[in-house]
Image 1 (cartoon, one colour):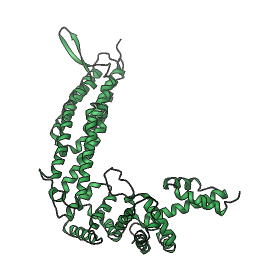
Image 2 (tube, rainbow, N blue to C red):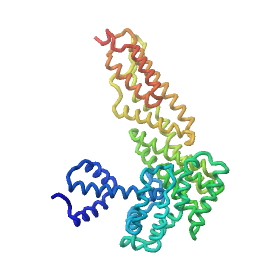
Image 3 (cartoon, rainbow, N blue to C red):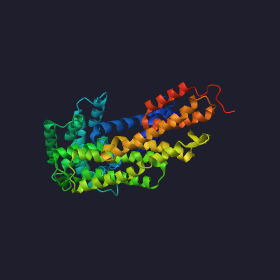
Image 4 (spheres, rainbow, N blue to C red):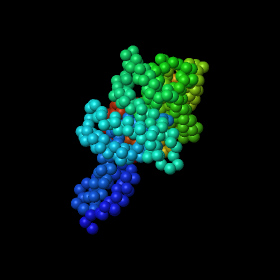
Length: 451
């Protein structure tokens, strides 16, 4: 068969339109060098579909994140993917000339270039379709209200594009001039819709385009003129703070669950949840005044107290964990004289693993110690742990440099255990210094073994 018939080509084209973009890209790469006539036709269909997808994302770029779930798991406004896909298909049918003009102008378009006029015209046409001919987009059984809500977001497309172009500058310090510009844009957006929710929708769209969801509170604080949590919790902007607090509480629940299991191997995972939780609270507190008895302030304080109690309880057991991972035993020299020597049998595997995870936990929670309220105890715990490791290292080093015979492999195993813990808690520089001292000791010199 030299080529597909027109009917079969249409059937394949319909199938290609149903494929996800990731699979389309794989097919495009796979079929890129084919010389087969039939596969070449399929390749052309795939390439055209990819081109259509890329143009769709360019035209609706500010709104594309509204069709994706946030990677950080924080709740945001999302629309079903079918809405954008069906709207774009309708535009390709009804505005074919405009779509082709947009395709030509999109070639080589850079982020710094002005938005081509056909992009704006296509968005306006999309608004018209959603409101005046929703049946061309709405699949059976779906609610028409979702189309109207997305149309309300599209009404903000000019303001949103301007806001996104200025977003990198607004991420820094917001002075009086920037604050005035943000408030004016919020006011303009609010006036775009009869329900006055345009400003909230603008912030929702900005949130969808932010990698760090907590930064939206900077804008909430500006448009509310620095309102505290009592004011914001009763305003139309309450959902932004509520979602961040819920995200912090959800992370606290995961952390509490891991800590209740009393499994030290889960500590390194638990540390990550602590950092996420406290980072969210810290960003919220930097943007909004949380009053002690306010609706958000009380929730934030409860989270801090729970984290503080669990972390402090775990910190108090660090000394015992290190002792178990670096076991020593008492050896009689002569008469009543004794000395501490390493237990060459080594720790139980569970104790060694627990110590490594504990070091990872201490390292992870260190950057947020000030926000968590356990900074002082953590510093004391790390200092005490370093003294324990140094003492063990000195004992082993004393054996390595002495004239008495010893088992070199067993001594090196002791060095490796303590250096691994040093590196996990105190960093690579400390571990490398210990390695240099071990190298100077020349553990494998002769004589070195016990007779």
